[in-house]
Image (tube, rainbow over all chains, first blue to last red; front, side, top):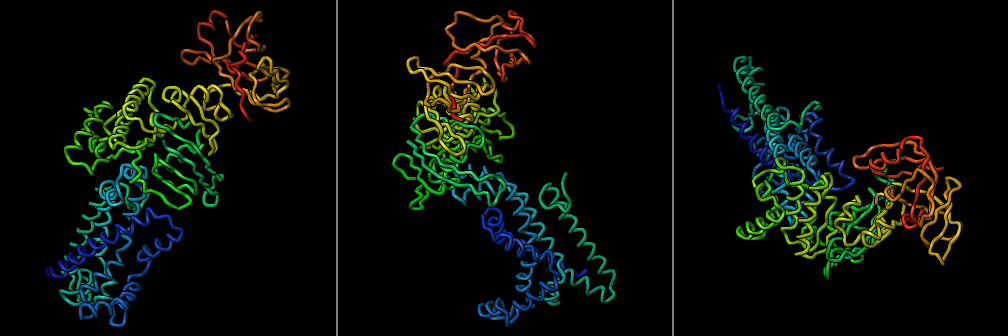
Length: 224
Length: 366
């Protein structure tokens, strides 16, 4: 079995989920605690990748990352090469694609915190940073794990966006789902079967971690 | 001295609740001041504004010579910088930290040794030393309250806000914690604002009482003044007056210091202490159920001026007392002891006379 696409997918998912956590924490903090009437707009934008076909997202990402797109031009002026069809481009597109999977569990976890605990922290002299590190993060920990794991799993399985933005360059943008697709196209069913099973097993294990760690955050069905 | 003069409007545009306006001016000197009033009077909002957790629309809040909030200059000190301790009704102990870590939370600026010393001092003062390694979920309600007090006071605050911190505790535990709090207060005289709606706590703790109703200060005075002569209907209810009768002033007798009022429910009249009310004016009369004497024969030769005839319609045993509901043109509640019930042979349907002293009738604005 050729492990290169699997390793590539893992590298992509790991980088993307860590970056998403760094970006998602402040965004989720703002969404959970800010009082602003226009907040629903941001919430809608954050949730957009949930309903948008990956090809549509991939198309816009391709345009934006391409040599004429804003992101692409900025990238090129800094790094001297184009962004589309590179691993870097794949990371950026994946961040958009998996954004709601990182942000929504965090928002849910922050919103379920008892506000009086945050008040208590402020009354005891703690600034926002200290309250965040000493109270919010420890108490929202299951939500943070869920965000990390879900964005990892979602990025691992992405297909449409990668196809649009990354193409199919072995070792650079050829991720595991693209590889499976290729094998099937080439009628190499045994390789596709093996790789599919690995992905299935990983996805199942990931969800076991999510639901094992947390009984409340992010369930597709209501809890009694 | 903590001086508060704030206004804050809560609109009905965003919520379905009725619009509510807070307009409070009050001073809280060192020592315990009880902020007393019925639920929904705005007591917790006042505390939140003092702590900086909510912003008033206008006005000012001063603590000593420091300005915490100045509505005119739109200046407001951040909560973390106000050095005001606040014990919430829910206590809000950090569930992921031990008792010791909870108490040390506000001391992060101090050195390790200093922290240990201060935490030890407060854990001992509030008798929770042996619980230091436990989490809040592993201690009892009374212990939580003690830990919450210790956590607030360890920071050596310049004022202390307590929002019904003893709710849900039995009387014995309550008075034990109150004693520890009063002992601490003796040693560290700072303004303490104690919010409650139960009159037992007002009597046990307060040096002064500020009566709050519908967002406004309606009365200030000693606990005896506010509980003994509540000025409004809701304060009377909160102060534990079981009887509230509506009446009209008939006659003022300055020379006797009394006036006569006619009950609106029937032809009966009562003699009540003289107050600022003109003949023809409607007033409320609040009477404690325990201040009513019950006789089975019409009493004569009494100094008490008010004798009302009635009939027992309901009797209910409540621990050490028996509550009588008496029909006398209006329903009146009287408390007697189980012994009195036996020796007088009180029962449903029995005709009785109620004797009420003039000064047991408290005039209340309506």
